[in-house]
Amino acid sequence: MDVRHLELLRELADRGSVTAVARATHRTPSAVSQQLKAAQREFGLPLAEPAGRGLKLTEAGRVLADGGRQIATAVERVRADWDAYRGQPSGPVSIAALPSAAAFLLPGVIDDLGDVPITLRCTDIDIAEAEFGGLVVDHDIVIAHSLTSRAPAGTEGLVTVQLVREPLDIAMAATHPLARQKSLRPRDLIDQEWIGVPSGFPFDTVLLAIERETGIAPRVAQRLRDNRLIESLVAAGRKIAILPRFTTPTDGGIVLRPLLDIPSGRYIFAVVRTDRAQRLAVRRVVDAFVSVAARVGREQA
Image (tube, rainbow, N blue to C red):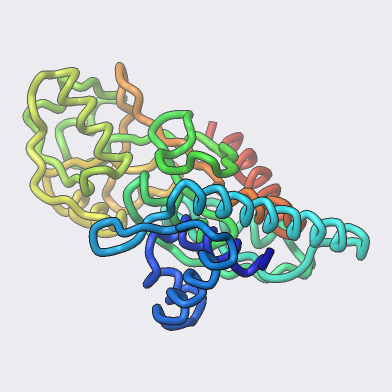
């Protein structure tokens, strides 16, 4: 049994297309297709079938792809044992992180690792909640968020570690009439104009909850991704927004007010593929995230 064929099927299962596998493995689509044909000859069964313009694995292909995952997990377990034998974790660890979560976690993680010979390679990515799980294909650790205490949508079958709950507050200019209140309820927000986020992002779920509570759709003037941009627009005008408590500065004309009666927090998670979760270096970095998140939670309580 050629282990390379199992690796190919696992990549195809994870990435969903020959083109994506080729891009990730630095080969041409033609070369990937040829290897797939060779795998089908070896195993004597169809391993993929047409699906629209692409391919999807057959049941036989999925069985072998799962075998590829098991082999990868075993290899990483051996690597972890070897690192333990040598005395400490080492090597590169790639991280894809939600920027607004990385802002209050990553500096502490880097400090926590100190002189440990682990090289962090970080990428900041702001996408919809359900898309974070797919990032584990190319990154060792993904820092994602969910509006509930359950792991983010799309992370089924992955290792998930809840790090911290961060309150989501109502942000407004210090001169806004609502700033005089210490806390807010959904009915206080009925006539307000909002700076929102794209649909599918956790912050937007709070707006939907406000709509369900009041029966009135919020008036959303803009839908933006960047919190710094949202902050500047809120500080300069009469519009309000939902922003995270830990990283929203309140010394530039913005005030934050807690929202009562409906859930208004997000949960930050570390997400890791099962095989990579075996690596000692990956486990050490996840432990650092857990430690820093606990410290932040205590300080903000």
